[in-house]
Image 1: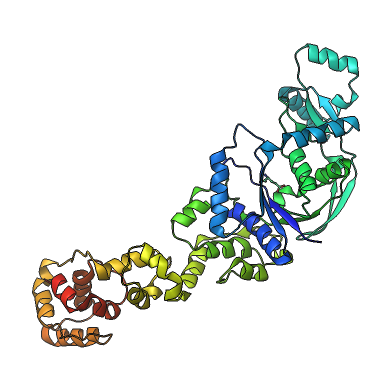
Image 2: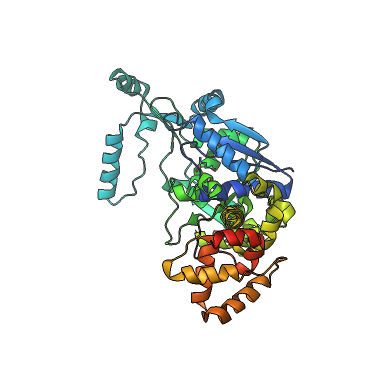
Length: 443
Ligand code: GLU
C-alpha cells in the first residue's frame, strides 16, 4: 500500500518551528515510505484565513525543501462537505441545536454545580418537529452536532502505542456553525477519506479529537487511517510555542540566515532519542527520524541547539558548496575568504562581515596613545610574499622594538587593521589584506 499523508495548517498566520515539526515529520514519513504529501489548507474559517498566509506557508515549506505532491484548499471543497452533511442528517447522526452561547454556558455551570461532567445534554436531539419550527419562528438558527455513539474507541497510535478514547465522556461535537460554515472536524474527516490519507500524523494536542473523528469516519462509511500523535515543541521554560512565536517563524529563521536543513534536523529530532546532527538532505534526515523514537515528554526546543548545529553544518561545507552563495553576497575572492574564515562562522552570512575585514572598506581605529606604536609597526612591515608566519615574525620584531607585549601589542594592531576588537585570527587575515592594504590601514 502506498502511503498518503497531509499537513493541514490553517492559513491564519505564519508558521513557526513547532508547525514545521508537524510538516516535516509528515514529509519525512512520505519520503521514507515512498508516499505522497498533501498540503491542505484548513481555510474554512474565512474570517481569519488569508491567501497571503497560505502563500507564505507554501513558501516556508519550499524553503525547508518540502515539495507537496498536491495542494488543496478546503474553502474550494464545500460541496463535498455539504454532501457529507446531508448523509449524516439522513442517517440521524447530525442534529440541529438551538441554544445560544449563553444558554450553553449556563447549562455547563449548572452541570458543574450538580457535580456532573459538563457534557452537552442533547436537548437538540430530543426536539420534536413542532418544537424546532417554533424555535425557528423565533428567529433562531440551528448549529449542528454529531451524535456520538458514546463508546470506547481503540486505536494504535504509531507514537503513543495503544490508545483508548471513550466518546461517552465527550459532548457531541458541533460540526456546523449557525451561519452554515464548517468547523474543523467535518472537512478534515471528509478530506482524509476522499484524499485517501493513510496516516494522520499531527501534534498530540489532537489525541482527544481522534475518538470522535473515528466515529465520524465510520458514520460516513469509511475506515479509519493510522494515527500518529507526536510530542509538541515547547520553549526552554516548558511553555507551548505560541501561534505568533515571531522570532521562531520559519520566515524569520530564513532571513536570519539559518540553514533550512539545520532547522529541519532540530525541528524533528529534538524530543527523540537521536540528537540533532548535520544532514545533507531530507532523505538523510528521514533515515535518522522514526516516529517510534519520539519521546512522550514535550520536546524542549532551544535556540542554542539550533545555533550549534547550524555552525557545525556551515563549517563542514566545502567551498564548492557555498561558492554561489558567497558570490551572491558580492564576495569576489570567495575561495580565499572561505579557506581562511569558514571556521569563524556560525551562519553563512557571517562570512560577509569577515570578508569586509579583508576587502574593506575598513575604518581603522587608532587611539592617540597608540599613534607612535602604529607608526613603528607600519615601518616594520616585512616585504612580501606574506604567509601565515608573517604575523608572528612581524609582532616578535615589534616586541623587541617597543617592549610591548600581550594585549597591549595585539589589540592596537587589530583595531588599526580591521576597525574592530574581535574577528578571525590576524595571522590568517594579514596575508589576505596584503602589504599595500596594511600600509594604508596603519597610516
Ligand atoms: N488545522 C489543524 C491544526 O493545525 C489540523 C489538525 C489535523 O492535522 O488534523 O491543528
